[in-house]
Amino acid sequence: MTTVSPRPGADATPSADTALVIRLGLSQLVAWGALHYIIGVFGADIARSMGWSPVSVHGGFSVSLVVMGLSSRWVGERIDRHGGRRAMSMGFWIGASGCLLLASSRDIVTFYLAWVVLGFAMRLSLYDAAFATLVKVKGMQSQQSMTVITLFGGLASTAFWPLGHALASIWGWRGALVAYAVILVVSSLLLRAIPRVATVQGAAQTGPASSEQVLPVPHEAAKTTAYGLGATLILFMQAGMAAHFIELLSRLGWAIGAVVAMSTMLGIGQLLGRLYMVFHGHRFPILWMNLLPPSLLLLSYGLYFHGDRSLVIAGAFALLYGAGNGISTITRGAVPVALFGAKGYGARVGRVLRPAFFASAAAPMAFAWTIAQWGSQATVSINVVFSAVLLGAAGALIHLDSKTRRSA
Image 1 (cartoon, helix red, strand yellow):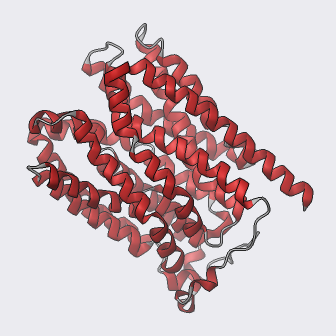
Image 2 (tube, helix red, strand yellow; image 1 turned 180 degrees about the horizontal axis):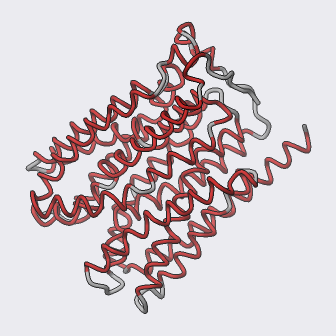
């Protein structure tokens, strides 16, 4: 397994490192809130005002996920080669353009074109790009920083769902999206904390990709398959739940005010799960911590089936789902470093996540269809099956890693 040399000069100081992590974290809060959660906050309003079906509206989000898959490897290779500063900054500006295009859309073609732009922006600016940026800068020492930036990103739903509803109540969903565009442009300044590639590895490293050659990994194909299966399942559930979380809570029979209040428990759960990783995640190997997300998801889905009985139970469902979802984001970023090393991280993860993005592109429409045809409980039951398979994939990675260690 390869390692990355520490960064030379002033950028290796603790203060510079702290500034990088905090600003990347704040950028994730904004990127997730102003890009990924658009459909969850404004989807119903868009469908009503445009006279479109929920499946058609959520199809736009699915288009964005296809674009994320198509651009995944290219973005990873770009960050490997040049660092994340330019790529992530470009993502924020492109995201602002996408918000403005979406706000101005009057027909389905323009609406879907806006989601093409937003999909490319999300691949350039969300966690996977931020993780690749951290690995480029910090190498094998990036896991703790990944955990910290997800603490900020985990608050995106808590901050932007109420903010989005408030802005829409004043200016409508179109005006709210214009406000989102302004927020994205201003927030792009946070990314100036990312070191330039010359600072990270020296100007000579901007040459051929051979400087990023990846060493062979024992049981690589099996590990890649297990990791890719797990990533596909978790991204599928995340995409579907992000688009329909408020609707699933609403179908428990609670008033909209209570539903919005309970939805904030998702962000709080993400925060608590990630705080656990900050303070206790180092006590166990990351592959063992990878068992936590599917376990918490299974428990949360079990509570959903009884969520119509009590607000406490419904809130506990949102809290535990958020915790499992939050920890899974960390393990999805950190597990490949443990399995394959730091060299070529962006390209490798980009390649593996490509089919995962394609699969998750179907999630918003699939969730919309299953909820309409079979109801919310059947939809959650499917997630129970997926979570059980996810647990098996996590166990397989532990087994494969132990085989590698025994043969070393």
